[in-house]
Image 1 (cartoon, helix red, strand yellow):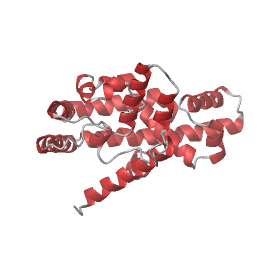
Image 2 (image 1 turned 45 degrees about the vertical axis):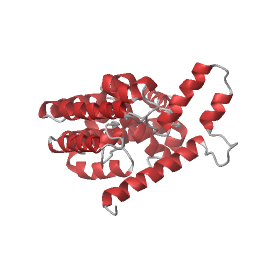
Image 3 (image 1 turned 135 degrees about the vertical axis):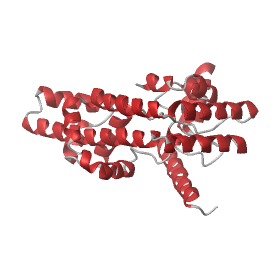
Amino acid sequence: DYSFEARRRYLTSSAERLAQIEAYGQKTTPDSKDLFEKAQDRTHDEMTKEYLGAVRDRAYSQRPKGVGWRALAALNSIATGTQLGNPITVMANLLSGAGYNVSTMGVKSALQSLGDLPRLGAAIKEARERGIILDDLMDMANAVENYGSNFVTKVQGATGAALKWTGYNASEHFVRAMGYVQAKHFVRNALAANARDRNSHEARSATAFFKRNDIDAEKIYAENGAGPETDRFYRAAVNAGQGGYRFDQVPVYQDTPIGRFLFKYQKWGAQA
């Protein structure tokens, strides 16, 4: 398969594996251990070891096999397409998504971001380059998984088409791009407030917001609006309001095939 889609997925998979090695280490010999195995060695509680194993499976995207799991994957995909792929949900997503951006980063930066609406196309391009917008929203929501079933693959393809042609993907790109623009204004406001008086209410509030999102505020101020920590904040700020569905953002029991079906949109509430 020499298609562009195959190459894109290869690059994505390679980047994900390299990130896993950087974060958790790599088993290079039979005796070497990754981070999860080292953590398991530090406890004698079997339930804790079992939980760490479940987290490891999610971190490495290991999926259970079998007819039952494939059926759940198909049901999960059908639910995604029917519940999200319609005009009413698209409008609700636009309104609620904008509201969550405001509630996350405040009214001031939200109003400032409205002035950037004429440059939305450029904002979407920048957001995609920084990993804030994914081309395949189905991957982000864990609705696409390889279970080795042609039927499941066809169902997932139909769901992806429904999200695209009903405008849901476009609405998600819009709210995430506006969240990215709002995050940029938030950083600019924080830099200005910190430069005026780092002990002011505005500066201290911004610093506290950075810390709550596990961002190094001093690095943000030192980068002055451009740098790796600033980009990390942009991703964290948008995901805080819009959801990212990473395995570390939701309970393990909700991130299994049966959990993704039974607790589908409750996952967002759990991480929010």
